[in-house]
Length: 182
Ligand SMILES: CC(C)(COP(=O)(O)OP(=O)(O)OC[C@H]1O[C@@H](n2cnc3c(N)ncnc32)[C@H](O)[C@@H]1OP(=O)(O)O)[C@@H](O)C(=O)NCCC(=O)NCCS
Image 1 (tube, rainbow, N blue to C red):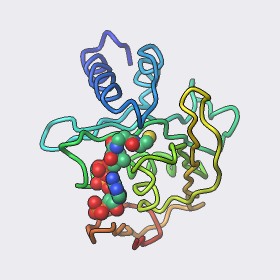
Image 2: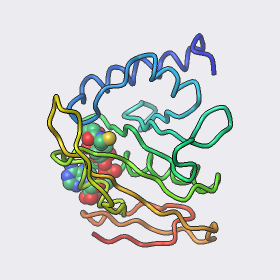
Image 3: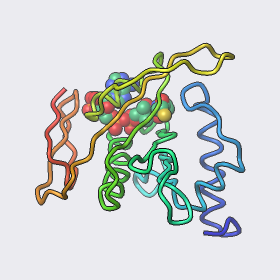
């Protein structure tokens, strides 16, 4: 995808704006880096009623190759939903998209580093991810980060599972062999 492409340029403008409004939670990726993720097709917008309401930005390698350091892992670097579209499973659907892609391409894990002091930790837990490690963040912000991880099944199950969230809302997740009740 070329960034002269109107769609790609619109995605970039959208992500730059939403990232800047959620900088405390998302951290910061410079415009050039965001462009590269968009070009590689690693940014998926969330669509609700024909409008973009959020996005997920992930890394599953480049130039047809898997990530060098952890070839079995898809990393989610940012997931964000606009304030006015939260708690209606937009992020859950974004995550389900990444999980489907990861399973198709036979990755084994999906992981995300998340600052310990933000609400999003409850989201990852609700989505069935496990807290497997912690690390110190940059000195400037003096934060600790959690590593959330989902182990993907080795084979594609036929069934569609239902993910049940804290409010009892359910989302169908094709190919996920589990029911999560939190
Ligand atoms: C975290 C974030 C992406 C969640 O988006 P969302 O679309 O509101 O999430 P969903 O509606 O899919 O939530 C699914 C479930 O996760 C849990 N959850 C989500 N946000 C939560 C919160 N703020 N507090 C507690 N639980 C939460 C709930 O169980 C929720 O289901 P329920 O509403 O039926 O109870 C959104 O709050 C956001 O963009 N935050 C700012 C950016 C950020 O922190 N990103 C993560 C770090 S990369």
